Amino acid sequence: MDISKYLKRIDFHGATNIDENVLFELQRKHLLNIPFENLDIHYGRKINLSINEIYQKIVIHKRGGFCYELNGLFHHFLKQIGFNAKLISARVHTKNGAYSPDYDHLAIIVNIENQEYLVDVGFGKFSLEPLKLQMTEEINDSFGQFKFDKYDTNYYRVNEIINTKLIPQYIFKNEAHKLSEFTKRCNFHKSSENSHFTKMKLISIAKSDGRITLNNSQLKTTHLGIETVIDFDENEFNTKLKQYFDIKIK
Image (cartoon, rainbow, N blue to C red; front, side):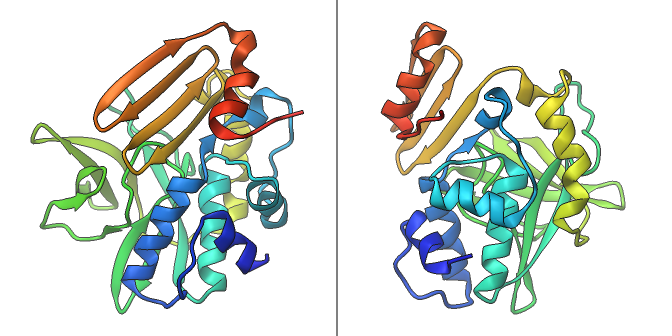
């Protein structure tokens, strides 16, 4: 991996010191410059959990990816520049109140001077900055408020606070995993009709003042809290993809 090209891809121009400020800025820059997307699933392109192939896709070809790709590559990058980082397996909160299986989501824990942070650039609309892993206080983030608690004795749970209510996002054990351990669940998401990723095309990116999200036939933009939705014919998707994300998939 060419670190300088990665830094250019996320528009980061400072020194990569191993501290909280740099970690926070790296995550912010990553989320504001690299989209979350599942397009390869719908264009019949291979998705391999190979760092080199993910690097080529995201950095060289200026694409996005989903959690296994985005957080997998970001973890490798953080390790390369000297951060103490590990991959963790997370189970996502579902509509029926249950949690998805292990390895359903991939996130990162970074340790800086014995303080741990949940780092996640692959969960779509979530926090803009890393979340300090602490149980007692609400965390104010640029994109909302969050709080950790425990889900039984084995799992941490990260919640978003909406109208004073805790809305569960996912649960995780603070245990290190290898990227290869996520292969089976990644294969499920890219091929199973039971995966929400196979239902429709999706690409979304955070902006400093909102978000842009595109699916098969709808463009949703949020600017300073005001949401605009535009419906269009599905055959216009590639045009919208190029217009709003500067991506062309052959």
